Length: 362
Length: 129
Image 1 (tube, rainbow over the protein chains, first blue to last red):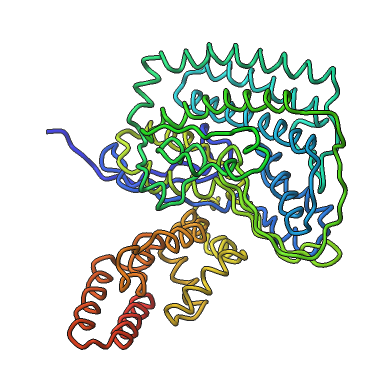
Image 2: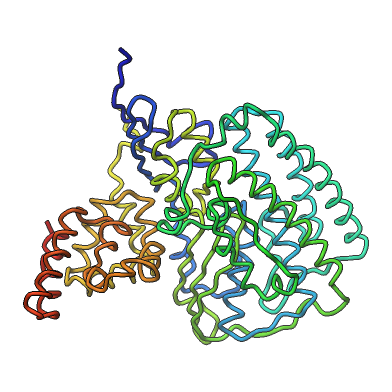
């Protein structure tokens, strides 16, 4: 008779599949995972404490250093929170430019996440194609903002640089290129029989469980919660007629496919911005005043919330940052991993949730 | 002898997680609801929850405020799902027993406030134990 043993299986803190250190402690019966717990604390920055007492001019640079992958949205939500508490308006052209840069950031983040997943399930060819395609998005970010990662593109009342006509043409060409290439890669993912075997029906999280753990972003939308998308409440996205996408299955396959679909959606949103954009000012000006505000935006991984309290000189008295990875990693550890039938699926399921330890350990 | 970092006691890191503004708010809410001192709440959270659940505490508390114990006002007042599902600090069966006994007492005696106060006192003891 086949013998089944109970094993405590630690994964990490250092693991070839993890970009950052984290430790998953799995209780298994044979290969089936019964429960999982997470240990963090290996790269804790304490950035909220560093931000306190500093002027907003310093804090806006610190904010985008919370995470290197989604630095643009940290910059955007931080600045929008300051604008909200100070009543600063943004010119229309600047609002569209913010969306363009934010969606480019989403494209590169989603492609990186899907690269990691394909790499984890050992489909190296597809993963390298995706990583290569990500470079096009990174180049466009650099073209518009002047930097690849820490762009500091948004400032209260607008953005720092305008989009030149020649850069606009380059951006349009890049979007066409990305769309064409992506068709091929999505086809590879959809039609790969081994990919489906490793992804479909693995790491399932139900709609109710996502709500219970406050799962957000692609994790929530892959389990049939499209209304979790914070872009629905953003005035510029509403003007663009944004509608969120969703899948129902809640498995690894759905989480990867929703990211692919959102890359197409982001390309469409950038095109609509370029169509709607008319010449005009990109900075309206304004002063950060004393106040208190909470504001949320849709990061590539989901809802990102900033709570900021300032004094009359624009110094940060108190700040709290809630990143989407916290909620998604929790959803993964306590719901998705439960019942996973193979130890090999633990890492792929974890990576399918697009965990960002830098964000979680802000 | 090499001492691996992951074998070290991570309680200091767990305490750092609970020191943020949003966590402080949740701990203050739990403290005032159940009459347990804040350091005791922190200590129980660190003992019973893993680190990612500690990080996710404010979000889970907000979900409970919006959706938890929705249909049952007595469970809502005692925070049955709050302490068993959203922030699992106590045993589910014992919490259900307390809620059931509180319901029975309210039906039999009609002393709603007294029954809830007694139920909360029993929950407090359970958190402390």
